[in-house]
Length: 433
Image 1 (tube, rainbow, N blue to C red):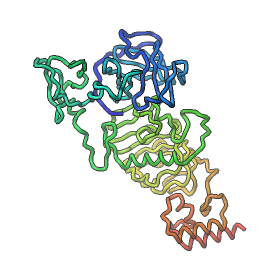
Image 2 (cartoon, one colour; image 1 turned 135 degrees about the vertical axis):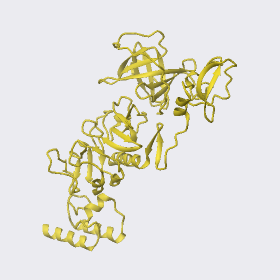
Image 3 (cartoon, rainbow, N blue to C red; image 1 turned 90 degrees about the vertical axis):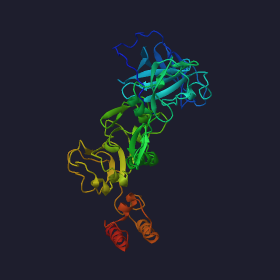
Image 4 (tube, rainbow, N blue to C red; image 1 turned 30 degrees about the vertical axis):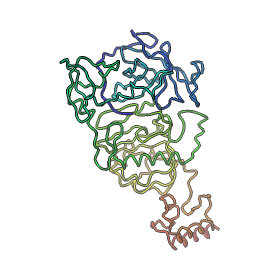
């Protein structure tokens, strides 16, 4: 996805699905989705959009379409699609190359949602679309000697005002590459220079550290191998694969501007697709993956979570996080006593809990059936001589243990593994006999 500013003025009217209201419906037909040419085809037919799937690039007809077709209608260059479950989306359509290529621009966020090309059109080897981009160098194009103002455009180095006889040159329409003013051109075409420690994603700057912590939550979930008994459901998995779908209703807020439909349908949940997020000045301030968001996160909470220094809201109740809560979570600038800002309840987290967590409130609870006792170092739900042997090996090898292993091995809770832990572990075993 990329952020752009290509929307034209339009008047949106309230219409009813099933009513055909358009003069020239160019979207009718079969379209490949760019990036998934071998896997997904959309067929627009009689105001229904059918999704046809393939594993080898061979697509059947609409009788073989998966899922329920989505009703749609077109008004001028706006297409409205009902994705069901109350999820209705509006896109502005930009056609290129004699209507063989179309871009869908999300109306609310000005984000390029997707690009499609018609069946049998050679998308990768054409002289039309490959030469068109939002900030294409227009300086080499002869628009004629007329004085008509065409708009502000990019000349390869900076924005300037262009004049000429028209926007269509050799059957290529360049009108969408112009802006109404120099300021608008500069806002879109000047290269975004993020500060050190920040990365550009979708035309915005995000903290590399914050992105990496979210990524670790996602990685831990994928690596946990948890079985959620999905039975083939596309909305089940850890993390929830639904977040990578165009049907996801969530959003991301950046400096008080809401961006929707950032999902790219690549089969992998990415950091900016996870739950509902709020960012300010490129830093993550809110992460909402609570019970009704269904992030379905699993594995341990990252020890480095305290690197999210601007985080003010962390809602992850009702997920599948397991293991021990890192004490570093208490370094966050969060109101731990307000469950609307901070909630870890109803995961699979184990004692002991950090001091900042109020386990006595009415909303606290954990599914801790699979938790191991401190000292059960090999996680066999029994503290015995095997745990002593494992602990001795850790000490002798001076292993740099991750936080989860350190907690279960540090029997006397002094953050150091040494002979004292062996003695105390031996006493526990002897005392249980």
